[in-house]
Length: 198
Ligand SMILES: [Fe+2]
Image (cartoon, rainbow, N blue to C red):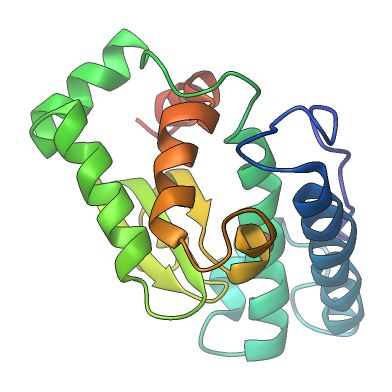
């Protein structure tokens, strides 16, 4: 397969004031596009041509760093746009909420741990809620990595590269993460990925 840049599932100004039009224009139109274009160039002539994106991400990890970085970031961003919606945050669908409480203590504890993972990721990377061996875990990864490379299935992720928040929050990464959890998360999409993963 070759990589293509999808349109955002909402208008560029739909996530304001928590994520601005300017951030989405740069992040989607320039950063994500670069991962798509570089990924397509790096894919040519490799054993991964014709494979699915998930197979490319998992297969190139530790073997072909330039391809992995771009394919990994393409995978992460494809989901990231859908992990947000206007008027997000709010109630978590029942089954998923029950599982969060069972595996992670409480919804509040999950939110604290998820934000702490994002704050604690030194430099560029992502914070995650993922399903591993039937249990939900909170994790953080560097650069373009995701829980996919450690045998888990990501169901929610937040981009903590500076390109995701610096225009709107400057150096205040904790404020960005709190706004993401409280006002942006599209829990319906997270629940959909959870149902597919179990
Ligand atoms: Fe990003």
